[in-house]
Amino acid sequence: MRSFSRAGLGAVTAATMASATFPLIVASVFAAELIDQFGIARSQVGLLVTATSLVGALASPLFGRVTDRIGAVAATRNVLALGMVTLTAFALAPSYGFLVLAALATGLPNGWSNPATNSLIVGNVPAGSRGIVTGVKQSGVQFGTLLGGLLLPVFASLWDWRLAVLIFLVMPMAGLAGMRGRSNPIEHDARTDWAHVAIPTAVKWIAVYGSLSGLATSALFWFLPLFAEENQRWSPQAAGSLVAVVGVSGIAARILWPAASERRIGHGRTLRILAVMSTVTAVLLVLAALGVLESWVLIPAAVLLGGGAIAWNSVGMLAVMDFSPPRMVGKGTGVVLLGFLLGLALGAPLMGLSVDTLGTYVPGWLASGALLAVGAVIAGKIPGSGTLADS
Image 1 (cartoon, rainbow, N blue to C red):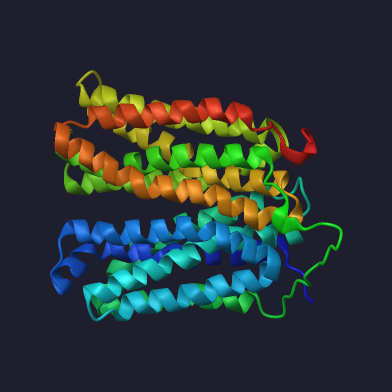
Image 2 (spheres, helix red, strand yellow):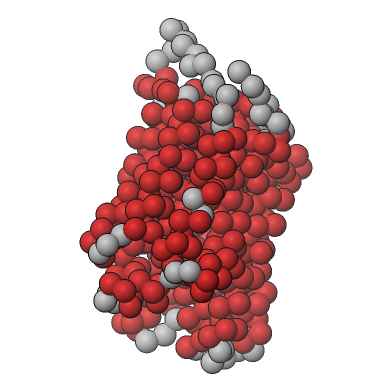
C-alpha cells in the first residue's frame, strides 16, 4: 500500500470535491444554453440546483455510515466514479427530464464527497496537522467554479457546450489516477459497535451552525449580483464580477482559516469570527438597500462573504475530524452535511419569495444577518481547539 504525500492528498481530495459539484457549475454557466435548447424557464434551471442539494442532504448521513464501513479509499473512488457518470449524463442529456434525473443523481457524489474525503484525511494525516490539507480539499469546489467559469465558455465557443462539459471529465479521471495503488484495510474493533455510538455533542452543534450558515449563505450569494443589478443599478458585467470577488476571497479563506483555527484560534472561536464577518455583509447590504451607504460597499461586502460564511465548512469539516472518533468521521460528517445542504437548498428560494412578495431586499438581508448572528452564538457551544486542548 502506497501512502499519500501531503501534496498528493490535497490534489486528490480537491479533485474529488470539484468533481462532485461540477454539474452545478455547468447549470450556472450554461443556463442560457439550457433555456434555449430545452425550452425551459429560469426557475427550471434553479430547480436543478435545488434537486442536487436536497438529494445530497438526505443521502449524506447514509453515505457517512457507508464510508465508515467500507473505508475512505473505496468511498473516495466511488465518489469520483459517480462524478464521472453524472457529469457525462449532464453533457449528453437529450431532454430536460433527463437533465433533472442527472441533477438528482449528482446529489449522490455531492452528499458523499465530504464524508469520504474527511475520512481519507484522518487516515493519512495526524491530528494537529490537518488544517492546510483540509483547506485545499474544501477549496476544490471554488477552484472548479473558477475553472468552469473561465474555460467552459471558451470551449463552448470553439466546439459546443456539451463537448465543453465532457472535457472536464479530466478532473475525476485525474483523481482516480491519483488513487491507484491506494488501499485502506478496514479495521475491525470487536469491542465497539460504532454504528450505535452517539455522535459527539460538539458535532451536533456544528450541524446546527451549518444549517444556519447554509440558509444565510445561499440567500446572500445567489442574490448578491441580482441585488447589485436591480437595486444598485450596476451593469450586468459589474454585478457578475461580485461573484468573482466572493470566489477569490473564498479560495484564500478556505485554505488559511483551517490552519489558523487548528494552530492558534480554535474551532469554536474561528467559526464565531466567520459568522460575525458575514453578519457585517448582511448589514452593509441593508444599508446599501436603504440608501444610507453608497453602492461601492458591495465590494467589501463580497470580500467579507467569501472570507467568512463561504469558508465556514473548511473549519467545520476540520472540527468534525478532530471531535469524532476515527471510525465515526463519516457518520459525523454526514450529519453536519444534512443540516448544511438543507439550509443551502432552502435559503435561495426563500430569499426569492421574500423579494417577489415584499418588493424589497431588506427583509431578506435582515433575516440572513439574524441567522448568522445566531450562528455566532451557537459557535460558543463548540469547543475552542478540538482534541488538542479541549478533550
